[in-house]
Image 1 (cartoon, rainbow, N blue to C red):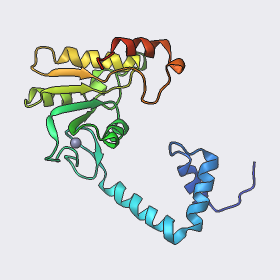
Image 2 (cartoon, protein in one colour):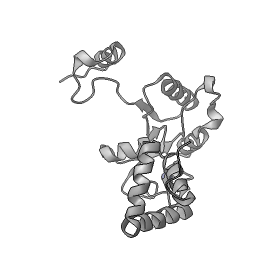
Image 3 (cartoon, rainbow, N blue to C red):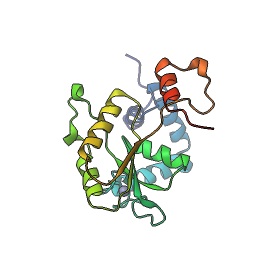
Image 4 (cartoon, helix red, strand yellow):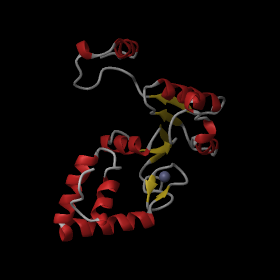
Length: 201
Ligand SMILES: [Zn+2]
């Protein structure tokens, strides 16, 4: 057992930081030390920002995004085309697509994918909310932007089945060659998908 070098307050800070994705115990120790050294410039403002976020954060009751207001910033944005809903697994996917800035649509966060082996069924995901949004009218396209995994595809098929008969176009993201990618490095599945999804130049 290593000897303690600091008091329980800073130890607790290190232990909590170590739970943040991307930070292991070693990085957490470095981050904690940096924060403590920059007590006034960083630790104080960070503690205030965290406290405020903790008080205000909520999940959007419409789309499932994380925000401090409900409905969220995306849902109340008048400039978006709300007739197109991009369906994603996680809030991080919503944020990634927004960073790309390729579309000005609405979103719906499922909160995961169907995975019978892990005991994740439709009732565990925000699928009912999606169906309600579509049946509520005004939606002309659903873009299913889930991960290209077996679970992602199962989820896409389930949603498509549930919306059968409704006047809504259901599309999914193309699978294929990544921008800047070299064919030689791609797996066979990706190459096959890219060939099938070829487009006219
Ligand atoms: Zn929202």
